[in-house]
Length: 148
Image 1: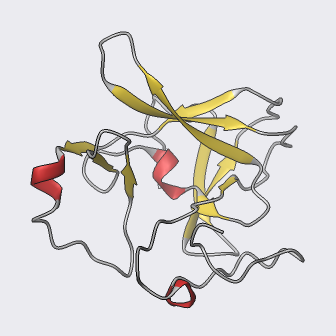
Image 2: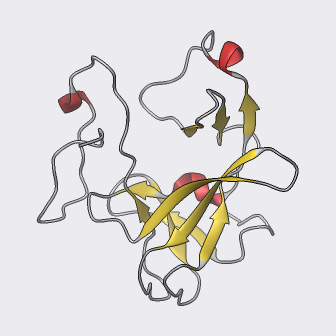
């Protein structure tokens, strides 16, 4: 899969964890911005009516109730898989234009070719966290992508 020009640090290819993954094209240092999560934005009232594919989604919820759907106009950051021991973190930031954004940063030094991971920490509400199984394989895996 070709990488969009706005994702020069990320290469998308097959992942040993799940489907396609995002991999560092070159070494990254702690605190380095890997990318900004992209996609179509839905206001809270718009996305509540959507029927999401719960098997595979690329949505990021924001504190204002809106979401970013990476499956529509998204970039390579949507392929960052979950791990219970992530090497990246996602942060919500206020952009200069007043819009909320999700920025992905390296948490530690990441070698070129290493797969990028964040902790999804899903808010599953009253659903059973076991329905959101984690397959990261880390020795400290909590067994779920749900928020601890």
